[in-house]
Image 1 (spheres, one colour):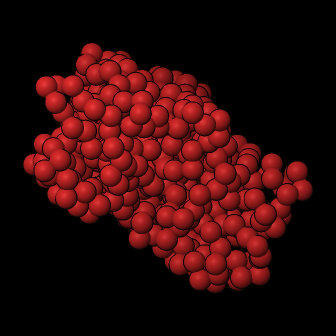
Image 2: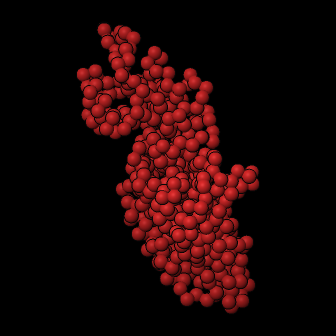
Image 3: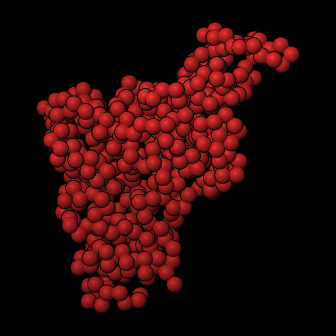
Length: 81
Length: 396
């Protein structure tokens, strides 16, 4: 998940942690977003819950990108939102 | 030996809650990176501290979305961003006679440049009462207009009826900028409910944070041009200022160390409760006023009931210049006050105390009853000495 401002990424991390959703801040890959230094990584299975939690807390995000991990090698992200 | 009685909290609060120092030390030891600039762990730790502080302050001040709270270096910066931004295209600015120079100087600058006219509604200099009908009439007559009002006088501590002033501005369709420099942290605030377009405040007075911190609130949809543009860490590929909050108004490296301390102060105030702070300030005000009642040659300004003010009282001892009174208070009793015009010449003209000014006493939640008693005894002694015509400066 990428953000416009780092403030929003930090708030997203806190909101997801309080909602018991697994999430962590990661350096934002260049192809994901040049907007701010960090992105939030979460499990794809929890995507509806993540989106709901952020929407309810009015945390803005830029886009959600899906990464397929294969033996710890990630493919390029696909923008899904 | 003079004591150490700090009664200059309206200039900046002292002492700060212990958590403020701890937060600053933790920030320097464990964070220390630049907020929102990099992906490494010290930058992220810095961003987390700033974001958490913003959230705590938004909760404390009744702000619906933390994005609406912008970090500034002080109230003056916030007032300048709001006034210059919102004055664009405005023909008249309506304000009160109790404003600090952080409001008056930007307004007079706009007037001097021929950009708008300034209309001053004269508040009762002593009680701080403002004729809401006159305020409303001036707002209705002025178009297009902007209004600016302080929430509390920094000279007398008198609270203005800010809800009524804001309601009148809203009904007249005039954006209102509020200077909450003396009320933030001393009086419960609910900025989203107030309905003002903008509210500015320092972080280092009633909010108990370090100097170099301030806050500016913009209501949803109020997004004037920023005063400064520059690096924000976001949208680095663009040579134009981001439009989203809070980055639109937060160019350049933030005072993250100070903000970390301010966040700890907000946590402390949330625990103590601003209602409780207000009660304590009122009790101390009553003690101060009662202790000085009936002293010959003493004029105490401000509302008779300290519940209508914010922990400030201004006074003058007849025949003693206010600067001399302040010097004697510090030299002989260690009572620290502020003498003069307090950067509010218009307010002192309203009070009839210009150009000399007054001696201002301002207490905080940590001020003890004993501190107030020392101040009372000191003022009584100075007044009695003057009346008995003893030379000034005689050691008590």
